[in-house]
Image (cartoon, rainbow, N blue to C red; front, side):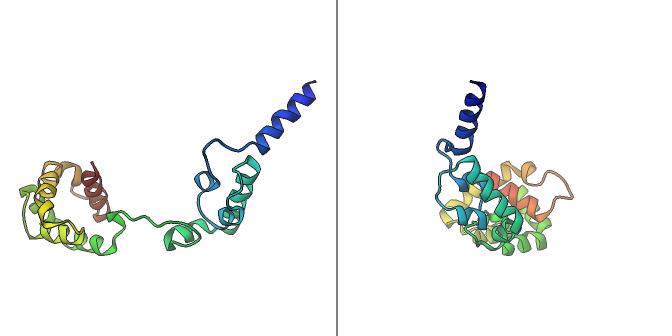
Length: 154
């Protein structure tokens, strides 16, 4: 009897699909996920996808290149042009943000493609969250952009 219960439980574990999940949700992107495709996300299928993704070491490449059904990060912090701008104008940007106006804020809004009609709201929001965007003197441009993105999304 115990043996039958154990075999039944093991069968459900290996063959039973996860409720509402997909292999992509559980295993990410990569060759393994592409190879397994739309099969039910059983433990065995998830293990196979994860194994294939791991053995080929392809997820990092896929995430950075946007291939292998991986989607690159699309937030403003990933924008190289904005990182360069913030890095080159960090001091001026901090001063303009503290005042809530200025050329560097206008340039940043241009890079962010913020409509002219919405810029005043953006500048007020950034000014009121200055300590969140610039929490320390040695903050990096990427940290500033991640903080700006968090302020904009909140």
